[in-house]
Length: 159
Image 1 (cartoon, rainbow, N blue to C red):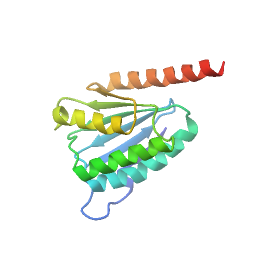
Image 2 (cartoon, one colour):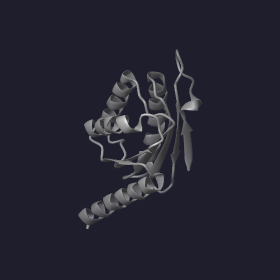
Image 3 (cartoon, rainbow, N blue to C red):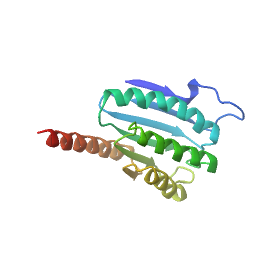
């Protein structure tokens, strides 16, 4: 298991609002625990940390999935939203994206009701398989089932 965190890098100007911790599990699941809100500085730091994480993970797993859980606040500023969208499109273009994304927003997270659709649009625009959850366990189970399905599909094609 490998761990990465936006706390490892210092931000440039105003400082990051929020933080992201990334745990890469040996079963092909990457877990992102994000505490919001998210500003541009957080996203810039996140991109730097995440590039290392997904590059290493993509070398280990042909198909991997991610579970993203946002805690406290899921609010995201427009410039951070634009950077996230651009980053996801680039990772997909280079084949470094997760096979599927399970996104956890519990009802008590600030902005969950209005932001769920925004995050769904961001990931959809980038071409990701995406599903929203309010229960982390269900999200992990779905991510693992998506990964297993992808592995079976490729196995069937090779046979």
